[in-house]
Length: 178
Image (cartoon, rainbow, N blue to C red):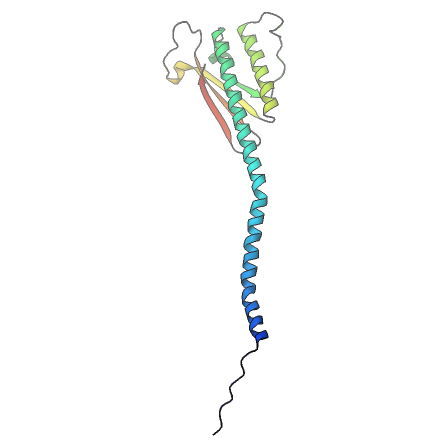
């Protein structure tokens, strides 16, 4: 009786080649994942820097709005009716130099307001280049608020809108009573 021939077992070199071939897809997948991780890691500082710049601008815009609110309060206490004098006005870009220098001569409340807005606009333009700012003030009673306490000459509600160039399609609005 003849026995069937059994094929010989593959040698050690064939088994090593098969093991290497099976590890190739795993190695390629590991390289792809590592490459994506490196690309994400390299982009992280740029994204973080952009977010930090936007946050810094927002903080500077909030400080500028607070400064303007303080100016408006000072102007109101000097007797200026903000609801008439600052009904609508564009503060940025800088409108130009005031006609009168109130540091060298006496000024009316309206002239003092012009100089104050000009100083605020120049300081804000230096901090926030390219920004746009609009101020809109109305009498407080037009907004449904109770009248000002006795002794307050004028009472207005003002809204400041700031558009920053580094943050496209975003603007900040502050509303305060002055």
